[in-house]
Image 1 (cartoon, rainbow over the protein chains, first blue to last red):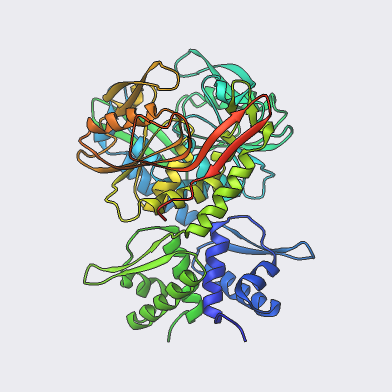
Image 2 (image 1 turned 135 degrees about the vertical axis):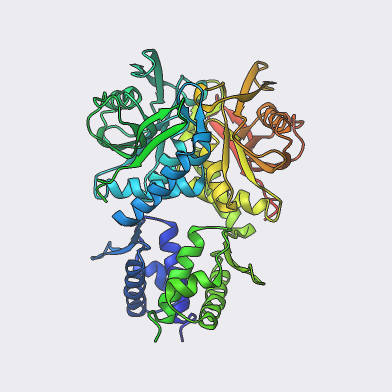
Amino acid sequence: MERFKRNERIAAMVKILSDNPNKLFSLNYFVEKLNAAKSTISEDIVIAKNVLEELGLGRIETVPGASGGVKYKNSVTAAESMEFLSRIARTLSDPGRIITGGFLYMADVISDPQVAWAAGNVLAGCFDGEPIQYVVTVETKGIPIALMTARAIGVPLVIARRDNRVTEGSAVNINFLSGSTGRIQTMSLSKRAMERGAGVLIIDDFMKAGGTARGMVDLMKEFDARVVGIGVMITTSKPEEKLVSNYIPLMYLEGVDEKAGKVSLRPNDRLPV
Amino acid sequence: MERFKRNERIAAMVKILSDNPNKLFSLNYFVEKLNAAKSTISEDIVIAKNVLEELGLGRIETVPGASGGVKYKNSVTAAESMEFLSRIARTLSDPGRIITGGFLYMADVISDPQVAWAAGNVLAGCFDGEPIQYVVTVETKGIPIALMTARAIGVPLVIARRDNRVTEGSAVNINFLSGSTGRIQTMSLSKRAMERGAGVLIIDDFMKAGGTARGMVDLMKEFDARVVGIGVMITTSKPEEKLVSNYIPLMYLEGVDEKAGKVSLRPNDRLPV
């Protein structure tokens, strides 16, 4: 006699799978956890898969074979992405957010767990299927979004520092030119932070000239890493020519007009999701 | 005729609720989303609630009344916390992690999304029921755990900076004495970062003398905030007297013996979860 009813098993499965994106669970894991026959678990999975897809709540993928099993992937449709990004663009376009110097206050938004979560899902979707072993960012403001992107992809997050820390052991340091300030800055990453030769996705919150992203690309070379992509929450429309070429922004900041109290921010309507 | 079967509705509900911890959903939300009668949805909720609780996957709470509804809370049992913390303690006790100077390399572990997620759930559980409007941390290494704690509680994250940033507008700066280095350091937080008079939970990755935590407590005074608790991933056993008194560590670092290549780290077996 089975311990749980079908709807109970399915509820448990959906919870476990979606809490662990991209992690492969063997059918035996559920057979034991839910005390049911393998054929029963297989049927449960089909039902869970269908309803999540129909409601746009994600995708359950089955991997055949002896070492196979089942895993969960977030999935975000183009319409959902646009809805989310339009909402964030509206929030950030509040003239009250303009800071002297033509900056936009957005720390509260980009470190909000639910915003970071949704942005991470969209960014992960933009690079779906790419061979990514690490998500890489540089402190500080991009960390929440980078962490949630790493979570959605199911890989570790690597955080480069702005200076060398004694608590992180021997490190690789690089200097880079910040395109917007024109100043030389430093970026540092512990030699222990990643395996050599990995595929990495670079994530940051904001890009203007692209100097920081360029610095991260250069830092990755020191680890023989292959940069499979660069994702940023917001990029300025100008300068059009950035110091990196292959990047995907979720939003474009067209301009901040301090005098008129106007912010022009628009979602990227050509996201590959 | 109902559009989804019971097990499909329950799968969808569990996914939506657990993706949004502590967010109250009206029954009508599910009535519309899943195209079912209110009484049906109520029955679905009871089933979902029971199976999540039985399998230790969290708690679904119902809030009665016109403005009521249903919400999800992570729940972590003492046994699960100990299992998780013992596993992390073993990982971090690897002598290969010892860095010259008696430090322990742990950046990879504490910024791993799954570790941060689990630590955030445990920390949120330690302060369950407290009136928390914000989770507060200071850059950099505590951010992943603080973000996941904020997510589990369902509140925004506030990140104090080590220096004043022009992009964050006018800010409150405080100086504090780092108890371990004996140096004066600065902490800065934009005046826009939080409402005055809020209840806050302070989260950090590591505590030695408690100077940084003390600094955060002082910074919160400038915002008339009430600190309802301090949670840290790891604290050193010595000095026993910290600069803050009311804190909960998930683990105690008893010592790092560089010469013998030995790390003594143990889970806190008195967590209030």
